[in-house]
Image (cartoon, rainbow, N blue to C red):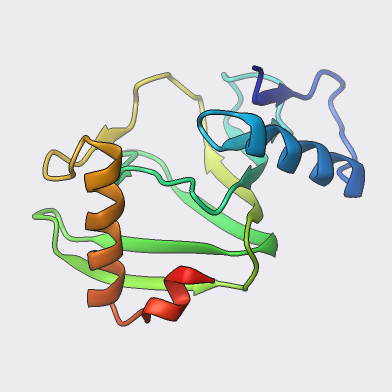
Length: 149
């Protein structure tokens, strides 16, 4: 199932119809996420995306060495955790509250598949990764109720 949509016109309006569509695709997709790329090409120098995540969507700790990223919550919630190079959690937070999250991500391009460096200390098994991220969030001061909402 397709979970990435591309802008083909040079402009795109994102209203409630797109938000509903992305949330529906995310809930039906094995990766538990969907995105609308507002930029036209992976080669663009600026990438803006509207991304929908389900509550059970997790990302392995990773970084993009030569890129910057910012997130703007549109609705819902996202828990984020920052890590030191050795895997020690150093900051975490919750953005908004609800079951799922929809946000705008802005980052620098171009996009090259595989350019993210996944943390070598992060568990590769999904269940182990979820437990690891929960422990990391708690060590950053988030509460169990933050994680269950």
